[in-house]
Image (tube, rainbow, N blue to C red; front, side, top):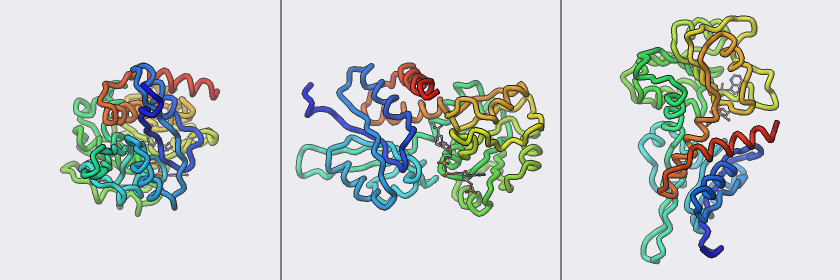
Length: 294
Ligand code: NDP
C-alpha cells in the first residue's frame, strides 16, 4: 500500500498531554497490518468547529473526542446515535467521505464510553443484572453520564448520584430515561459512607486522585470500606489510586479505568475499520506506556 492510501483517525481534546489512545490504536493497526494512523490533535475549545470540518475536508475516517469537547461537538455532526443524543456526549466520530462528487461527506457521532464501561465492569466480574443491586456514582460530568446510562440499561434498580454541585447532578439525571429510581445527593463523607454501605457498586468518575495530585481521594482516610463492595475508579493514572488502595485493603473487589479506556477504544476501532479489535495488543500497549511513565 502506498503512503497516499494511509487512512487517518485521531483524538481531539484540550489539553492532550498524557493520552494513551495513540499508542493503543497504532499498536492495533500494526498488529492487523492496516495502513492506518492515529494522531493526537490538541484543539482549543474556540477552534472545535473548524477542526471537525477540517477532518472531513482532509479525508480523515473518524476521530475520538475527549475533554472538553464531548458535549460541545454535537452541533457539528450530521447524525448522532440515540445513546449519545440522550446523554448529550459524543466520544467517537465516523466520517464517510464518498469518492463520487454527488454524495455528501457525512459525519456520524457515537458514544462508546457507554458499552465500554459495561464491558469493563463485566470483564472485572461484576454483572449488574446478576447483583440486582443499588449503585453509587460519584460525579456528574461527561463520563458519569455514560456510566449512569450503562448502569440503567443493565438492570440496576436504584442509582444514587453524589456530586459536589447538586445543580450539575440534576441536569445530568433529568435527561435520563428510566423506570429505575434515581436519588441525587451532595457529595459529603457521611453521605458517601452511608450510601455505599447499602450498595453493591461504587463508581468514581471525578478526576480526584489522578496524577500528579495522587494524594486526593473521595474516600475519608481511616474509615473502613464495606468488604462486599465492588469499586470502579475511572482514573487509570496512577494504576492504583488511594481509593483503589483503600478498597484492596478492605477486601473489596476493585478495578481502575484502564479496561474501560481499552474497551471504548476497541469499539471505536471497530466502527472505523470494520475489523475485530486485537484487545490483548491494545491492553499491552497501554500497560507498557503506563509502566514507561513510572
Ligand atoms: P468532567 O469535567 O465532565 O466532570 C468532572 C466531575 O468531577 C464533575 O462532576 C465535577 O463536579 C467533579 N469534580 C471535579 N473536581 C472535583 C473536586 N475537587 N471535588 C469533587 N468533585 C470534583 O470530567 P469527565 O467526567 O469527562 O472525566 C472525569 C474523570 O474520568 C477524568 O479523570 C477522566 O480522565 C476520567 N475518564 C476515564 C475514562 C476511561 O475510559 N477510563 C473515560 C472518561 C473519563 P462538579 O459538577 O461539582 O463540577
